[in-house]
Amino acid sequence: MTSVQYYDSPLGRIRMAADEIGLTVLCFEGAKYDADRLPAGCLEQETEILSVGKRWLDLYFSGQKLDFLPPLHPKGSAFQMSVWDMLLEIPYGETVSYGEIARKIAEKRGLSRMSAQAVGGAVGRNPIAIIIPCHRIVGADGSMTGYAGGLDKKIKLLELERIVYELPAETFA
Image (cartoon, rainbow, N blue to C red):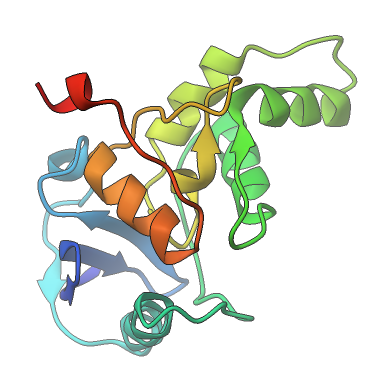
């Protein structure tokens, strides 16, 4: 059974879902892929896992560097899971590129190389935003790249972690 709750963050409303194992979804309402993340028959109700997720978000949005994670249960392919595991290794306040993650995954798998674009596809499908920190991924040259919740939210999350980025004016034209 999947339970759903909502969290009103400083950046907008967040939809959270959890099963009996852990959080399965955490995304800004209206984000890319938001509509296809929840199974049919979800119940809007409080659970212990959702309460821990809300507590984590409260602390995160107050600017605290956290030393715990709520129970997580993302669902995806083996490749996606390996990328999301890598995202969890990115320290608070730091960024890495898609290429860096691709190199690390290739190394772990004993491959000579891995596609940064494939990594980007998995990052974009991350079902548990913020906690699995896909907002900490940047282009090879350090440039700001896409974010399913919107680049404006990505910038605000990075600013919260004291990573300062500015988008070129034409981004919003």
